[in-house]
Each structure stands twice: as structure tokens, then as C-alpha cells.
Image 1 (tube, rainbow, N blue to C red):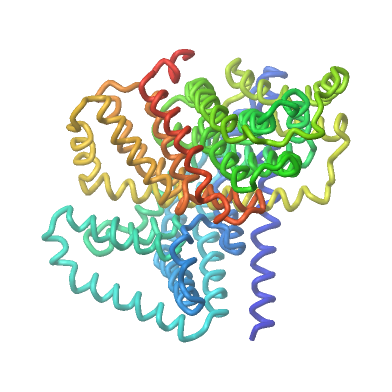
Image 2: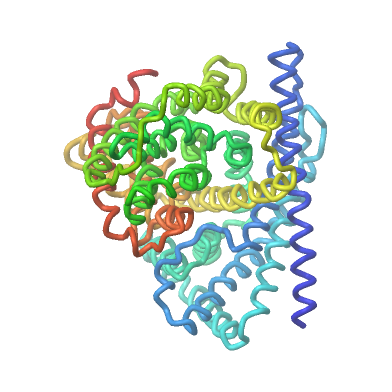
Length: 607
């Protein structure tokens, strides 16, 4: 039995990983060909965006399958980490069964939705839309089988407990439906606070928790066909703007593999490494630069920490302080383009991506200065024994080596601003540039790492995009219930006008960023709150910067912030080691956020 399950898991892994890796390469090739044809050859290919959109939904769904197979879907584990091993096993069974239940309920609707799309043809290629929409039932089926296989590995007692829990919930929903309908919008509390909150706290992956709460609400209290949920998921996951997510993730992995990130860090260290606290400044500067390339906070931290931590520890830096600074710099750099959060918030709220890219640089610089002040004070006793100022020649050599890497952030930003490529396409320019630099300049391009990078890109992207898809369905359900109108009225009625609205938003997004992580919080609440912000006179770019930075504080704040644990894992430091040291750094970030919120010019002055 165990051998058969292992063979099935291997088959499922190959069925998802190989096509997903091919799709990542295909997306890069298609979009880069479109840029070259339009800008260099002045002969636009009208079908590139269409083909990229078709391939993208397949990439999103297969990436979700890979993320599920690897256990990489975003979820909250802080609560169950304190459970006994037996309780953790039971919780894992409930979480796995929740995934399976969601997928098995949704699969028939996904098949119907894909079949209905046969009557729609793409305008340029003339392809039936069913070929694109089939990604939803195929990916859903692969995930369902994966979840059931994982459930088969667990104790039958734990699995039976999970079945009993869901059977009980189904009976309550079936017989209690009429009473719930009579309670008006208070029933939202049951599904989107209690049920959703219980799922998140019990480590059900956030995307699946969103989807299960939405399905439960619609099936119990409405007559809405579930194909509507599938169509909302399709809409949320298929935005061509979001194609930048996997491409920038791959770019972040690429600059680390080619040595470009290390070259930038080495140059900054040669400039400031001899100053007391200088390596802390280098870490902040490196995070600022690297964030402008990769767009992924995990990739940013993974590129910077291994290059700096050994020397900082040699100088006597406490490992808890190092991880604290790393995590706080992750929160600081959330608004540096081309951040995935900026791309996501633009896609779900309609705010200009180019305006967000321009508006995010100065707020991050304000927070970096606040962190530099704390780092200088905390590093006042740093041992400088044996540390000498490098000669000018060594600094110049480090600069010459780093020039190709330092040019990349400016290349990406200028390509968008000058109209060479869209925010989606520009990542392909960075990828091609990095490949050339790695092969010809840095001579560091281990081909054996390319396939794992492609599958890792697909997995991380699938985990993000599934959350966006299910959160889009949930946002639609909340909108149809009238909740969005009530929320807008409540937020608009806050005392203090725009100042009160910003203050409440900061508190709300710190909590949401800690509990839901960044992208789910933005996708779910961005479309609801941005119209209210505009109504009270807050510029949409300014509001975006405020909520993104507030969300970043929650994301990197213990004990719930997932970003904090990612920083600990990358720095190879126990989470307990930094639990106390991180608060001065987060307070510095909060102080910088207050300045950004109070001075809108910092966000919109260069638009």
C-alpha cells in the first residue's frame, strides 16, 4: 500500500512539475518575443498577450498542484505549533480533508464552466476558450487526488475524526439554513469570521480556507450556482498583470544563482563595512536594491543574508539582532518596485502600476532611514577589531564588478517608464539581461539549477495565485451580500475624516497582514476600501503605500507574521532568538509609516 502511494505521488509530481517548468519558459519566450517585435522590429505580434493568458491559467493551476504536493501553500502554523504531537496529527487530518472537500465540491462546477466556455473563441488565435478553462478542472482534480493520497498516509482514526467534523458541519448548515437566512448579514459572521477563522487557525491553507468559507456561504444561504465561484476564480487568477508574479519570482532566483546579488552586496560592504554598524547599513541598502529586482521578499532575504551574516556574526553581532533587522528590512521594502504586492494591488483595485512603481521608492527610503538610526544605536558596541578600511582600488574593483548588477533595477524601471515594455513584459527583459550577465560577465550559470528554479517559481506563483482566485470569489460574495456597502459607510463615517480613515486602516492592515499575509489581505479588502479612501479625499497611490507598509509590519511581526519565520529560516536562527529584539526595529518601521501617512507628498510628489 505504501509503495503504491509513493509511486502515485511520484506520478502526480511529474504530471505537474514538467509541464509547469515548460510553461514558465514558454511565458518568458512569448512575452519577450512580443517586446522585441513591437519595440525593436516595429511589427507588433497581436497574439502574444492572448497566448500568454491561455498558458498563464495552466501555469497557475499546475503551480498550485506543486505547492500542495510540497506543502508550500501559505498557512498559519503558529497556533498548532504549540499542540501536542497527537493533536497536531488530528489537526493535519482536518486541514487535509478541508482541502479535499473544497476541491471535490468545486470540481463538477469547474467541468461545467469549462464546457460552457466552448462557445467563446479568442479573437486573435481563434482558439476555443475551453482549452484555457480546462486548466481549472484538471488542476483541481490533480490537487484533489494529491489531498486524498496525503490523507491516506494519516491515521484512520484522525481521518475519521475529520470526516465526522465535516459531516456535522454539513448537517448544521442543511437544517440551520432557514434560521441563518432570517438573521440577515449577521450570517456573514458565521461563515467569514468563525468558519474562516477556525480554518486559518487550524492551519488550513489560506486559499482553501477562503474558498471553503465562500462555498459554504453560497450553498447554504443562496441559490447561486457554483459555476459563478469558478468564474470569479478564473477572473481573479487570469489577469495578465499578474503574469508578472511568476516572472519576477524567477528573476529573483536568477540573480541569486548568477552571483549578481552577491556582487551588489560586496560593493556596498566595501563602501561601508569599515564603519561601526556599517554592515547593517549594507544590509538595508542591499535589501533596497535587490527588492527592486526580484519583487519577492523571500528571494530578497535569501539573496542578502548568506552574504552578510557570517561577517556580521564575526564582529560580535547577536543572531537575534541580525534576523530582527532582516525581517524589519523586509517590511521596509514592501513598496519598492516591482514588488509583487504593488502588482497585485494594482490588478485588483485598478490603480496604475506605473504610478505605484514611482510612488513606492521614497516611502521605503523613509523607513530605511528610521531603521538605520535604530541599527546605529543597537550596534554601538560592535567589535571593529581587525576591520580596516579597504583601499580605493579594492572599492573600485568591487564597483566595476557590481556595475552590471547595479544597472538591472534602473533598466527595469526605465523600461516601464519609457514605454519599452509593460509592467508584465519588463520582467522578461530582466530575465534575458540576467542570463547574459551570468553567462558572459559573471561566468556563473549552473544549468542543473534551472529546472528546480522553474518548478520553484511555479509552486510559489501557484500558491499566490490560488489565494487571489479564491479571495476574488470571496470578495464577490461579500459584495453581493451588501457587506462592502456597509463597510464603506462605516469607514467613511469614522471621526477625523481622512486622518481617522488612515489611522483605522493602519491598525486594520497590521492585523490583516499578520493573520492573512500580505497578498490575501490586499486582494480581499483592497477593492472594498479603496473607493472609500477616494471618497474621503485620500490619493489612491498614497493610500496604497500606507496600507502596504502597515500590512508589511503585520507580516513580519511575531508571533503570527509568516515573514518573520521566513527570515528566521533564511538566517538559520531560532524564532525564539529574535522574539524580543525585533520590537525596536518594528517600532522604527511604524514611526516611518506614520511619517509617510502624515505627508502624502512622499508618496505622490514624483507622479
